[in-house]
Length: 251
Image 1 (cartoon, rainbow, N blue to C red):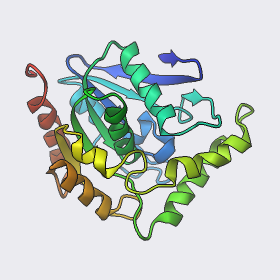
Image 2: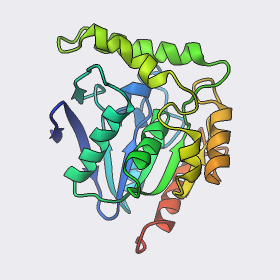
Image 3: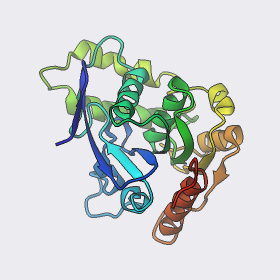
Image 4: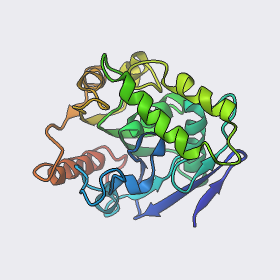
């Protein structure tokens, strides 16, 4: 089992295909993990509204998928400073471990927050971004966000290595702000990375947050993109977008 072992974490990852690297941040809120591209545990047997990017992208790229810390097969220390930077340090370390200095990035749901944070903390790492279904805060979804945090916290609270005092501090530290939580509108506007956006349109993935991202980045917007009538064309456009923005070209 491929594991990156760090001082305070172990990160499970998988690599598929070859060529220019693409890093995938899976959906699933803080339970973001590889399998969430394919299934939603709360809806067993129901096909996702989107295509799994791994088999599509791996025909052209070296695809890096992984479970974020404290999700799936990854683990990490929860201490008094646990926040978005804890995750981003893992992501930078994984890229360095694999010898990747620059890559394309696709993030879905909370993966959008991870993707933007990566470029903010390691400028120049991202050559192009596909952002799908961004989470964020709206006027009406605070209770939904809080429920997601509660569900994640309950899932790891009984682990012997988790201190409940520190666990209780994660929510206000990571999700006390607005927008996509991990970064600011100001950074998004000056980010400068070519972006393709598949906008959200539900309570957890507010229209207003996607509209902000589209306005601030000048993103190419693919909409509609969800469901059996659109998902194949949407992932094909994401693939082609990455091919178009690959440094030195892509086969």
